[in-house]
Image (cartoon, rainbow, N blue to C red; front, side, top):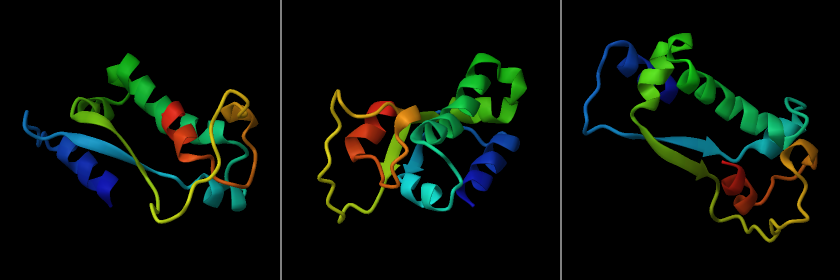
Length: 114
């Protein structure tokens, strides 16, 4: 619903220098992995950023998304903050294409690659 509302604003030129957005990214890797919708964490990153990068490089490929991106000021990682996250992200952590564990990557891992 939220993406529809944002698309509607962009479609009807509802813009203002006072309106800015954050893109909320839910930490749902483990859910998608359990349903066999993805094979690794790299797919999460690609699904999020490839359309944004393409619209930034070639605005005519998706003019509405390009217009919306001009109002985006950042990203927000969304999760249940009551859940403890004991794993650490370090130089020995697998790269996104090798993160195939059924468990969610740590919060720091999400933020590093976002």
